[in-house]
Image (cartoon, rainbow, N blue to C red; front, side, top):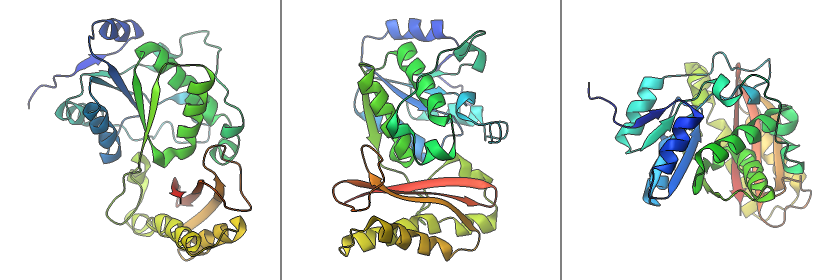
Length: 282
């Protein structure tokens, strides 16, 4: 087997030394590992924009509630390293929880209104964990650019708000959701789905498309757009709907009159697996 060539960095000190050694700009792709084509599309875009690419792989415990899937979150580090090496990534940051959150750690980053609804309401504390770890990664790596997927649209909005509010010198780049041929948004959690659940899961994207069709047909009532999505979801008995949202794409404020750029999003459980998806309109 060919040896992996990318630099593997385990500590903050090693990352900072690596960063000081770079004479090119640096792009960061933060991940929790178990990489798929969605992650790799971010890496390719980062490489195409020039400079060196560093990827972080860290399953961040502070963004998981006690009842969530931290312990069973899928992991395959050696496969991840081979994929990143094949994509020409320069370095990978592989910290332990103790490296990111040393003994006595007390500080968190709380982002206001944009973090409150939707995933913020469904997963209390989640975005404080996300914002804190991303702020730490930005401070440790000092990237010129950082790349995130649109699938986690609220996370992207939270990170943009935090970066702007704290005057962090990082260009936050959001890229479109990568999908399987049947429309299911690529996600590490798709690995949890049984064959029957995987067959049912594309209904999430079909439901969003039902909302898009209603919107393109002239519907502007937020309530009726939400109902168009929910009705499509109800056609699949394995799906339990948590929420359907029609919100302003920047503030994530729920809309009754769907004017201007909006985010149509949903969260649903299929068996024990919780999935989210969204599309931007128009």
